[in-house]
Length: 357
Ligand SMILES: Cc1cc2nc3c(=O)[nH]c(=O)nc-3n(C[C@H](O)[C@H](O)[C@H](O)COP(=O)(O)O)c2cc1C
Image 1 (spheres, helix red, strand yellow):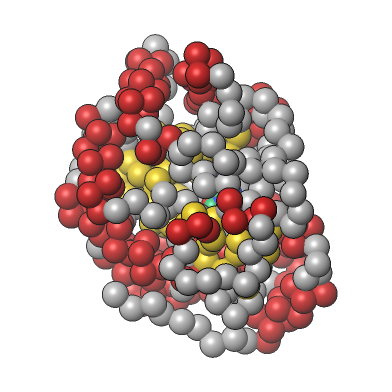
Image 2 (spheres, rainbow, N blue to C red):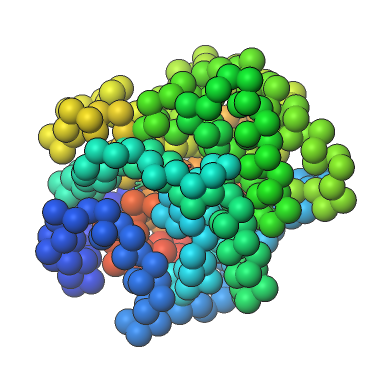
């Protein structure tokens, strides 16, 4: 396993300069990704279809395949509300996961700052707390964008239960959110591992997980167009926890897993100066996650070859994508790379193609 690195070019340095200007407005900077995507054709972005990058992910249970123009997909959280989705095609991405959406509008955590960047380690700390416009609005936007999208640009929706909801309403809340998203999305992601809402994580609550995923499966049977369901897991699970969870998810008919979400900050593997007292409830993303991502993803593929595995966490170089695809992953998801690398996806796609030839 190699944590492939890149040397900073002029664009990366320019991006670092822009990050520095807005260093006290990390959340604003974070929401500028949509503008960056919109105007990226002006600075050399754009969609150039490359046959060698195309992938079709098919499923033995008859779920509709996921068609990607490139095996690099934008991870959940970057476009939380489904606005301007099609601009993201300009970045060279093969698809996008919108959300995470909950049943209703959520303001998220109220402390500030909720996002911080560690320039030296190229990581992001986030404790936003699932802020989003609610699944109905988000699904409507996705539906509208789907009509205008180019071929092979997949749109998934990530959903989660409403944090803090009363015990007896949990299942209904999650199932409603799921079923609204299901009608629109190409694939579903169930975020069972959000570390920053202060509530219990679902991936540690196997009884409720069983109930929820059984209910999703029952719902799927009633809809003619079957879609793939992925569970997004936390990177801090021990190997034992991960394998037993995968066993359960396989029995519950899940098509795949995303490994993984942000790494809970309170279990950090080194101290992080940007964390403040309230921020410790959040998670970290970016380059330091990669080795764990690679290890967990390959472990999963080895023990559960029938599962579709999507690697996510610290992927910022095309050769990392190559290594993961070679190990059997179906595609990868990225987020932090776009904050630290100028035209990250195009560069990664180029590195991936050159490693093919
Ligand atoms: C600011 C921010 C917000 C995020 N929001 C979500 C979210 O709403 N749902 C989710 O499943 N993951 C969310 N994530 C996690 C990412 O989808 C991804 O799993 C994580 O950043 C690791 O990938 P990376 O190292 O490429 O960034 C968020 C990450 C960041 C940095």
